[in-house]
Length: 96
Image (cartoon, rainbow, N blue to C red):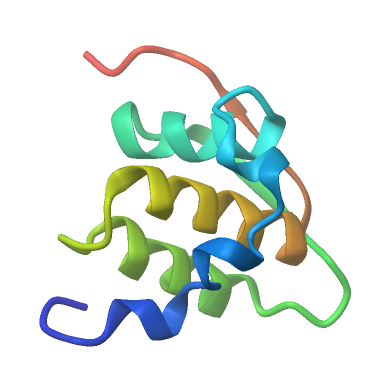
């Protein structure tokens, strides 16, 4: 989604709970691993009524965008994942 208004896909920074602005919660760790290493053998467990493909396309569009700042993207994606998924499991291996 290059060239689009990525901010329309994200909650306003002030609306994101502080727990998601830390790198030390489950959802922020998942986003960091996804962005920096990739997720191996990932399994997404959506909440009722969530279309997994649409949710993941939404998150991917944010992560691949050049703006906003990485800290904002990570907090926003962590918050959105927590809203859309019950859990996400994956193998935490370093990318070679």
